[in-house]
Length: 403
Ligand SMILES: Cc1cc2nc3c(=O)[nH]c(=O)nc-3n(C[C@H](O)[C@H](O)[C@H](O)COP(=O)(O)OP(=O)(O)OC[C@H]3O[C@@H](n4cnc5c(N)ncnc54)[C@H](O)[C@@H]3O)c2cc1C
Image (cartoon, rainbow, N blue to C red; front, side, top):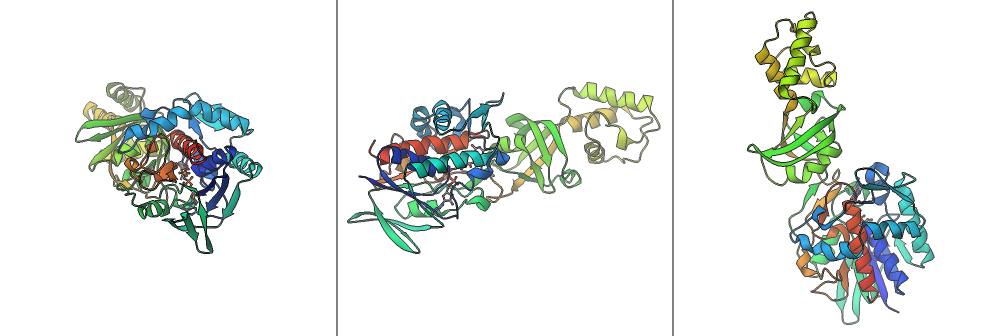
């Protein structure tokens, strides 16, 4: 019987272990944390966006974008949903394609995987951090503080550095690095952005539904729309996560918010002028009432160098247009991100040219496989990263167990 050791009991490691066990291998999972799937249990704000109906290779990034294709083709979103259904997890898709468990609880996803691992007789060594992986004359040897174990095949599923609080580490990069696999430069994506726009601090805690574009020297690099949250250091929320990868790719990028998507600049300016004419006793601080959230309105007025206490009476057309322009394009220069502790995914990882995309096996060290975020593959926001974990874990498990 082939012995398979899986290093990392996260999404991809659990999938790899279950798959290898179902194909007759004797499987051991090593997990450094006290329980399996800790990160998985907090995904999707505790709801676990486990895949996306629109998942396709175009939603993935990395030095070689084609690397992810064979794994995604073999075990895509449809196969994933079917697989989880067989484990007893019913899933539902939202209109935007995001798939969640019907229970709306990420813990259910972890639970069905744990039950299946137990039923498949997979040996679990939790609280056990692997600190060395080497090839000896007797095969592959895995070592940890308390001992070592030989295995015919080893699957490295250690994840990336993102989500530090839930188990993100750089250990996988080191283990594979010691076998000769180089790592690309690493950075964060799906993360809150820092900005030095003073409006952020004043708006801390406020949410807005906005059109969002990322520009650099006037050129649009990305565009989306949806919820934006203001924080004391910058911007957060689903729409910001979605464009964060592009916003952090180059220096000097700016995130622009269109806070009144339904109106043109002229229409909005007209509304402000009507307000000034009809209710001249109001102050400028109230001029945006009814169009944007009140605190946002006051920040827009201040951003134009105007005083909230000034009367709206006699609001000049030019000033109304300036205010409307500001509301339609409120600019936040990007100065960085909140780092791996707060990020959902790592951009970069172990270089994929060292692995066969059809088997996930190392080209340098036969018998060693890798899957999930430890590799230089990352997906867009919306369930794509977990889909990569399932697809690549599945392929590594199949091939490590003998195909
Ligand atoms: C807060 C948050 C929310 C997210 N939400 C979503 C979402 O809704 N949808 C989505 O698609 N993606 C989401 N992601 C991203 C997704 O969770 C990851 O891309 C995915 O979990 C990666 O799977 P993995 O198996 O490669 O790594 P992980 O799930 O991180 O698992 C790696 C495991 O290996 C263990 N490990 C590491 N080194 C060792 C070692 N040396 N020895 C033993 N064990 C080790 C770690 O403790 C960890 O448990 C989210 C991420 C975060 C942080």
